[in-house]
Each structure stands twice: as structure tokens, then as C-alpha cells.
Image 1: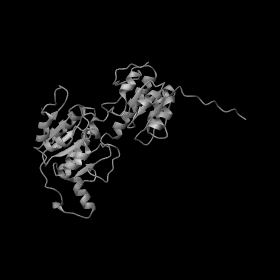
Image 2: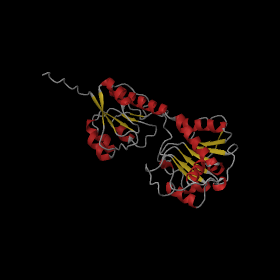
Image 3: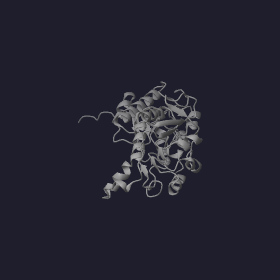
Image 4: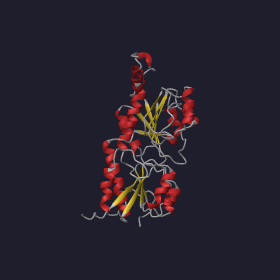
Length: 328
């Protein structure tokens, strides 16, 4: 009888809090280069992550919260890699205090989110979703929807004009829209885009599209006061972060016909309660945080995030360290 072959122990364990794709082949193949294995918790809540964290040499996270308690429990953690752009689900202050570099992939889905924002604008403007839903109910009637207006010549206001907002601006200008933007930075705006303060942008825009990060300053940036400044014929589009919009006040504004409708790809929480306003309002288009998705963007995200982890585990400086901490 042959003796059993010894099972090689991994050199590293990588805690993957959650993921939004069918398999983990990409991650496993890249991590295998340094004999690292994935550590998959039973759930993505704090209790499950706390139970798994002490074994982790690195953390990869998609949407799950990685609070200070989990970071403190991960005593051997060398890097935290965000499988995405935003960092509001990670306690960066705690990671920095622990000397743990935090990374993200800030440009992997720029094209996809810009395309999705424009798709939502077109659907709102031409009542595509409205008419589709009506035909599914057996109503084939041109006058069933609200009056349609020509998109060309209308004004799109961008709240935030970084990489994604800049791409949206380029595409919108190609459609003949007038584009205005407000941005916290002093960077030069794309050619053809006028800079406005937020209040003026809200008052002038036929479509307001959000492209800012979620921070303490931008939480509920769009609330009752801001919605009241918008035209009654205007639409709100959010492909940024759910917390940028106060959804309760959005529901109230729609009930009072203060704005014409909205398109929401990001919510707080996710998934939201779809049976209540604003999500249940027929003037609101809801997509399930899908703006970032394409076969190309997911491949880019997964490969680059896994490479960041490998670099961090090996003591190399990974791509896109956001907190200025060097790996040890």
C-alpha cells in the first residue's frame, strides 16, 4: 500500500470577505504563485469575519464591511485590497494605524459606469423602461407615458467630474447635450464643460448625474433642499454611492412632483426594500449595482486586485496604495 502524499501547507491565507462573480479561478491561479490559499468565511457579516480574521495574512473585500474590529483581529494581516473603487466599507484609519497598506482599483470600470449613466439618461428621457413595462401589461399606447422631449440641447449636470464624470461628459457632448459640472478639485474640466456651483447646477440641469465619492461631506449631499432646487421636469441619476442621496427625501420629492423621476444603480442598504418608495415609484429606474459590470472590467478588477495582494504578501509596493503605508 502506497503511503499518502503529504499535503502541502499554504504559506499564506487570504481572507476573501465576499465576491460578485461565479467562480474564483482567477484569484486562486494568481495567489498560487506565492502558495497562498483563499479563506472563505461562512458569511460576510462582522461575526463571521471576526472568526476568520485571525488566520488571515491578507484581506480582499468587495462590498462587505471591514470595520476596525475585523482589522484588529487580523493580527498577521499585511494588506487589505478593495475589489472595487470606493473605500467607504473599510476602516482605513484603523488599517493605517496598524501599518497595513490599503489598495483599490480606481480606474477598472470607468468606461462601464459612464456607459451605464448614459444608458439610464437615455432610458429616462425616451421613457424606454416605462413603455416596456406598459407593453408587458398589454398596453401598447403611445400616449401612455409622459411627454417626450428632444435630448439634444438639454443640460446635463455632473456632480463630480473625475475619471468617470469626464467620460460621461465626452459621451453626453457627443449626443448634443450641454454639459455643466461641479467638482471639489481645481482640475481643469473637459473641453466643452462649464463649471458651476452646486446650487446653480441643480437649478439649470435637466439631468443631474452623480459621480462623487461617499465621504462625510457628501453623505446625503442630495437631500430635500437640493431636490427642491431642481426643475420639476428634471431627473436624478446615481451611479456613485447610495449614501450620496437621501432616499427618504427623494421619495417625498417624487410624491410632491418636485422632480420628474430618477435612475438609481446604487442604494443604501443593498439590496433595498423594493416594495417601498422611491424604488417602487414607476418613475424610478432601479438597477442592482450593475454599472461597473462587464466581462472586461471584472477580469481587470480581479487580476489587478490579486496582484496587489501577491505584491503585499511579498513585501513589494503594490499598485494603488491609498493610505501611504508601505508593506513590511
